[in-house]
Length: 130
Image (cartoon, rainbow, N blue to C red; front, side, top):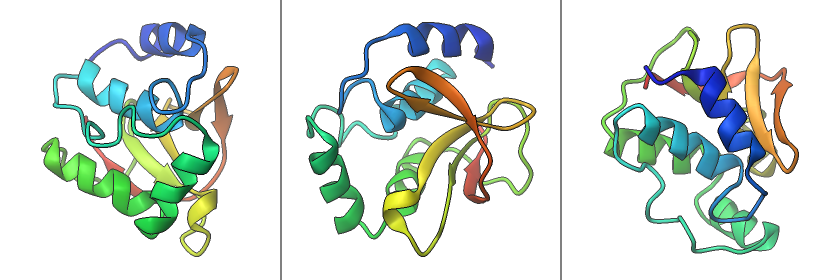
């Protein structure tokens, strides 16, 4: 497995840019760093702001199906318990716009925001091993 601390530091230092360096693309970049194909290649660079991101999420019925489909295409296996480096969609199943892509850091879910990674406490809706 790639070194999570190094990935978080390097990715977190990049300037936020919707469609290339954002919450979803950080998750995809972590998966790629661990040797899988890009699970979100079909979305990379296709939106340039939050409205474009939300349009994709709402059209697909939430972030969970977007990430689940991408993880399946990348060959990742679903898991039921988090371990360091596992990727997930966290949040509320009934609120598609409140779902977040996350990486398990050992003591909580790490979510990429405009200022880097922060820990978030929310239920996992789906998890995949990298």
